[in-house]
Image (cartoon, rainbow, N blue to C red; front, side):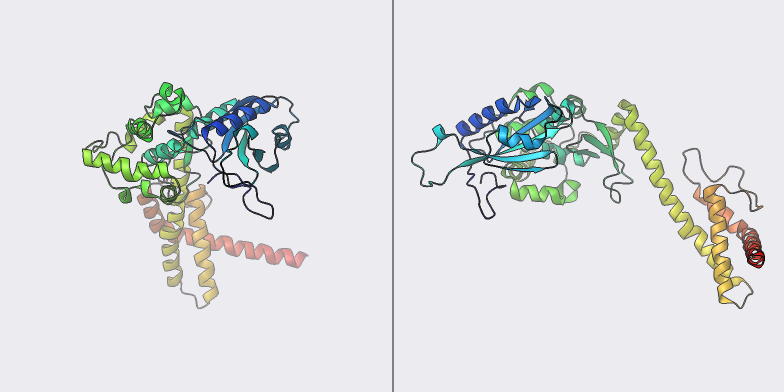
Length: 399
């Protein structure tokens, strides 16, 4: 199939797959036109062994005229039709007349789909060129890196906080770099070969990816996170990615290659956090905030609440509402003392406090305090409750 953006609807356009001659002609012509609108124009390096193409991808940055928007791209390219959305515009341009096949059985007018993405600056454009270079290489590298706590996106290379990644998928990601050459160096891949040009064959590209020390076939796909849903979709839809998963990896196992794990997630994480100060600071801050939040939930739910309920049930009161009030006041008071540092309840906090040097709560110390001081806190909390009621009555009487 060719580009599909214009093939449906009331007035569809015929956008078949292109031979290299058409692809190169259109890409060159579009680059010339876009260079009059933008200071930087580029296309990702093609995937290996391409014999035909579905569409043409272009990336641009820094408009020559700052008032120029993507709506100017269609007319500049002589587009038959254009779809503008966000930072991208997709256009249908006429198939070069001198390259139409005379012996074609289909006489419909032909068009070529061109996708143009406007990048914020040259740095972002270069990262996009990296992440979309060599066809499916970005997806293959993403699969390799994922099991080691790294994620590749159009924004950069991220390291994930292990404690957070299952429940907070997005916020678990901390930016490592959006510099392509730095990213390649981190994963021990040759930047010179990467930017040199297309790989001749799929296998040559696979071997390049496999030279990353994070690649191994030491466990089956269904045992690790490489078998996640996004990869299964790519296997169905992307032939090159499917051959990587089903042919190359299987062949490596049969040949006894890459059977041993060459590094570990901990080693990768330690190396990155040692090398990148800003990443380390943000990584540690997010991890601490997440763990503190988890601990605070645990303290309220599993330490304070059971003791507050048990003491409330032991109160010698016949009014069920007062039991509820006591439980609520006690739980709130204990929460304020332990989690907010409130010292106004007249109880002695542990000499070492509730938080250890690592910034996390000492849960055993918290539990002991709650158990030992709950009754005293309950009395103080109820005194406050009655004092507030008295003040409210007095205020109403004066009003």
